[in-house]
Image (cartoon, rainbow, N blue to C red; front, side, top):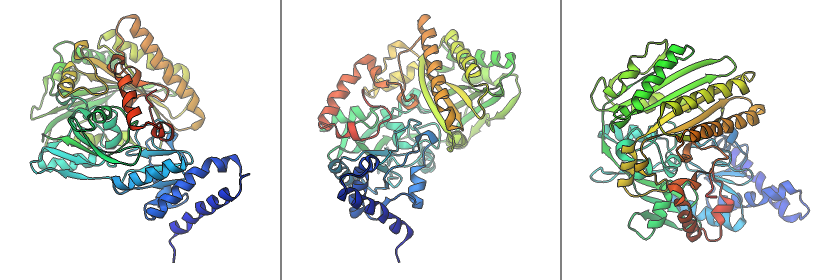
Length: 514
């Protein structure tokens, strides 16, 4: 007896037959035909790995995205088991001229970044390799897993890799976009610790890209170049020893002026020369939240310091804040540093609508307060009558130590100059429930970023950097990387590996080069 998924799989084949035999088919069917044909041909080679609409696996995989704004309706979902099968599928997709997408963790809240309308969705969940080399200095990991899985695998060895801060974020997307880590001030961006990539090229060829190998140019381009050059199926990262860590912080009620004053005074002290930001062995984020419909404000500090110091000096101004605490992190040394990314998993909750946008500036108290004032004032002005909305701004310190560690490991696509000093990579994020509010919220986010940029530029405090993994749908991060020097090189490398523009025109990108 045929399974339900097998029976459902026949439906697109019947549709394909009708489309091919009827030249006067409607435009919607014509549009879907390449995707349906590609799915059918891939299914003939990998019958157990292709899932059609209405099947349980299709529904699960096609909706497994961080933001509901990104849920589309692919012709099928293909779950490859290895790089070779992806290469075979790419040749079929190319021959049928089907659109396609690639989804690892699905965390980037940019429509089209991980799913596709009427095309092949390649879901990388089965690419979950976790292998240590003989001397445990290199971890080979597949892109289709989340960082919590990687960290809990390495922790019993007393090891870590330079990956994401939130346990639910996927491996693949974070690393090809750069990667902010708890260890960045000593290790650089997440991509800086990658020593090799296994990658499937546009023609289906599977290659290994290393710094000094025949694909050295591709190796550089993948260090922050997003999915514009191929599909990465394995990352080889250097490991380093770490076990215990101080994990602290809190969420405070931010409604009182006293709480806000203490919070920003503490963050000013952290960001000042000689403050906590100049200690390469600690990491922090400061976050403001507002619910516009109620006016409720919250202030959050997340504090991390590997080692055994129970009271890191870097955080001393935060630990003395006298305001009502809504929720507190342990404020103690825990046996495993992995407790923090696992505790923060709930922040990566799926099932809502999300949008990000990136804006950067120097850590001057005036710029810090411009960001806070802009977020609060514009959110209350535009969204006070909109229910179920939370607007946040995350201050993410990028220290000079971080940039020097990155430069010491070899240039990446981001290519930020340490001589420009420490800055704050700001993240605007909004969570909401109703699709009818999409346009209003998109406009608000753009207004917030534009206002912060204008006001900080007027003071000479704007930092010209858009971080790809935090960028909004309308932003163009590559234009600013390396002060504008990275983009021409990226375009030349793309021309070399995608000369007929197959990936450029048919693969869904969160952020194309141009």
